[in-house]
Image (cartoon, rainbow, N blue to C red; front, side, top):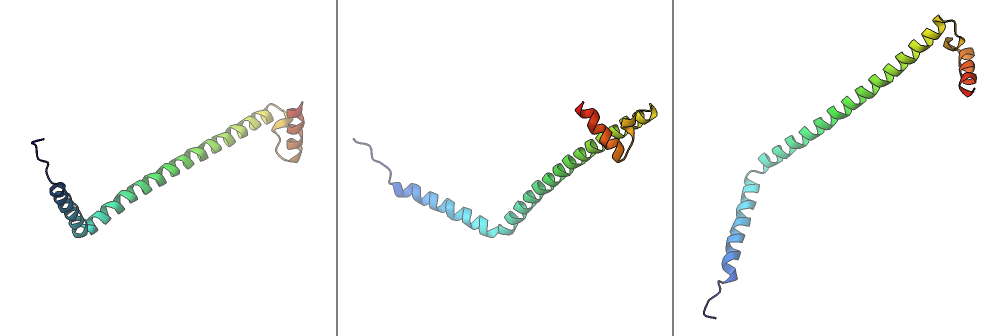
Length: 101
């Protein structure tokens, strides 16, 4: 019981000073802080736009490849004399009948 405790107000003064110092630095360098936040936000926005653009280009390339493959298949059918490769209404009706059967 012979030990004395430090007053809790001594630690509070240091913490108060630290808070004031941080507030002072924020006020002093507010435009630097805002600029840095805008640059970071712009970086993430541009990155998201680039990723979305890349995803759309890949999907479109796959779509075009599927159409080209289907056109090649139908062309080969026509070259073999198969009626399934004929374009137009008659060819579409015939394709529906063949797929069902």
